[in-house]
Length: 370
Image 1 (spheres, helix red, strand yellow):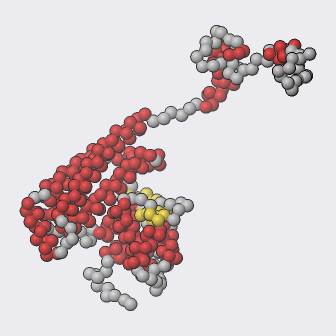
Image 2 (spheres, helix red, strand yellow):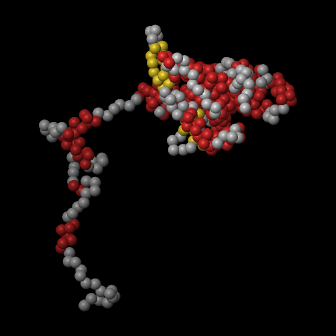
Image 3 (cartoon, rainbow, N blue to C red):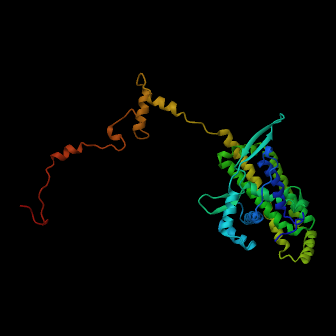
């Protein structure tokens, strides 16, 4: 069964894949053999649909739970409701394919009229799999893909993310407010995760330095976003907005009240303020960690000092040797073998030799021994 191929009927995700596919084909082509156009199999559309719906299902789960690994069985159940014909084996194949790395070569201008060529593998997977567990989550590239694909539907709100709430309230697009709130909270959770990773993982030192370098601009952007969300809070509690919502609810048949929208926006406000405070704390911690740092221990110098014999046995060396043997807090000017930790005094053995061992015993202790 085929569907019409008009531009209005093609999903935005597919149009994005179609646009990128020509770049990928050029990436795989060889100039001497002509333009490269791969052959498309019959089930290509089916597998692509399963992959896109899988990414969309993971995004919906993230909007409810935040960025975290999800069991494959939890993903298969909602996906099965959307595609009745999908099987567990097909889902495993799609997951393995999206989680597999591939090599992408690229070039960056060097500001001298040339290109600096490079390649990447880590940024190509769309799915991250937990080793040893049947759990998956979206990669950062997959989140970027879904975010870019969603821009087509929300082109009217092409300002910064926080401005979407204000524009949606002003234009009476109340059905978009819950989705915008969840997307903003998910984006804030992702930024919180990046801040934690930048501090905890030494391999992300470049990201940490970049955040520190752009700290002033990022902090200002967070303050601006806070002010915009405050404007959204004032608008959503306005009497005119309440009247507009009641009219919209009567015409659209929405099942929620304006109080639900107010709660959603207040939750966004709390998350933005927490992110602002967390970013300030991140800057303080990261700068302090970068300035203090850690110094290496000169093991070779220590070994040489311990093994090289001195010409004369000075008092400091003798005291150092005693300090390693004697109990803590004891002055080396006074020493006795009994002070050694774990020492045993064997002098009692001489005393036991003089004692005559008892070789008899009695069964009647009250009867005197003759």
